Image (tube, rainbow, N blue to C red):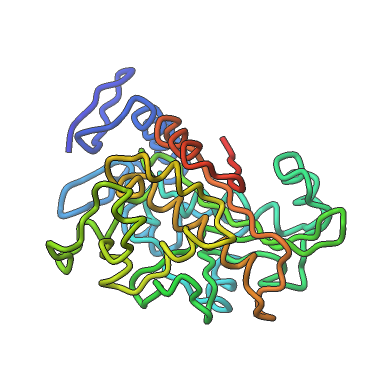
Length: 304
């Protein structure tokens, strides 16, 4: 913990913050002090001003009050885990819910506003999912990536089902970040189960022998099968140019989410009748995101 003195105020914050993170934390803490509490929360017995005290966390703050009931009811219909730091003022899960659920309470308003970003939306498909949306969406029970367990797996922060102007039913998957500096890094690379035969470099070696990837041979995840399949939006020749697997670092989660969208679009299951699966992402770092275009992705969109 580090104490920052800004405009005559003292803020108890994490040690290493980017300039953007610092500005966002200070903004959110000032709002918390003005509207909720000036008491800190604690992590490992250390006080942090961006954390809410236990009394407020137990009331589901910082969720926006008018959508709290809708959030909890949705969690009953489609069980999902609240993030460990949902009680953090910079919680990306809370930010996502606070942004989208107020809009989705009225499908017509949702179309008017979201249509400015996703221009092919004609109507929210309220007859699918939970009146057209699902938080922490994954393809239950099909598990097309074969990576979902009780504790991990690929999902999207929110999914929105909608009809386009041609009458097609589509699914919009959104990964939402607030202050994070990257999208999750490769768990396989860091896994204690990874053996010496699991080589992450060069990328060309993995393309020629998928078993070199721990995700593939150690976990039986379908990431590389889909990446190199006929429906893949990825350009294998561009991937081959990398000295190491391009999905080891902060692009790993984007890769997996795009594979989920591709799999849903390609699925013949009646559970996933979507003509298109579209993946959007928030952009915490242009430097990381621009790497995406080097892979020749053709189906990924973005929100800034």
